[in-house]
Image (tube, rainbow, N blue to C red; front, side):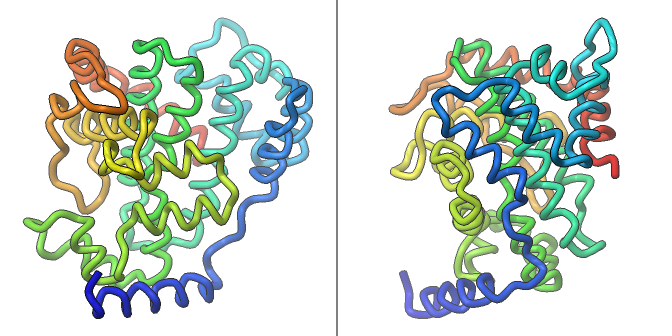
Length: 290
């Protein structure tokens, strides 16, 4: 690390610690972690935590009854939603939506928040599809990881709206992470990992946030590879995150030391994702309702 970058990084850490607009971890998220840390955690215990937060309860019910899930009959209470949708799904919805919603409220009006949310949800859907196709036991981790993988961008946009606007709009032939590091001393993966660690997110979610651009590196792992592939699929399907012009070729993820995804699975999800537009719109309408 150069002296200049080290100095910028030190300044960034000081600025982040002083940032008044950056919210603390939503209480409901901390309570959910507490419930999930109990070996005897139940759907009832999770529903009780969600029900204590009226805004989150309303969002969960709107999501459960949205076209995204397409349930055959209306869900009228949180406990039923937990039973019908499952423990992992409710957990990932509650954590992912609450975290992004809390941070989105502090972002300036000139940040493309709509584009950010669409990319996050499209990535989450692609990640969940990949997890199910691979038979992974906790597809909710993939979905939640997809929702929060770019959370560091919201932090940088809150820290200095003008500086981050320049990063997103200038020197577009240079990779975004390089532009971020040049301006702030760290990129959105490092800043996102700082925030999710501070908010006591589980290690696998911190790993996704930190490692989704270098998933086979020391900060990566199986979940990071999965979300990195989903990120590329969402971007190539026409839902890029602000400041990004193109995604990695999905063939990059067909082999690797931590998680090799069969080429046919990647291609199937790549073909299927553009057909999810209505479900993405339905999810966003429910998740961002006030």
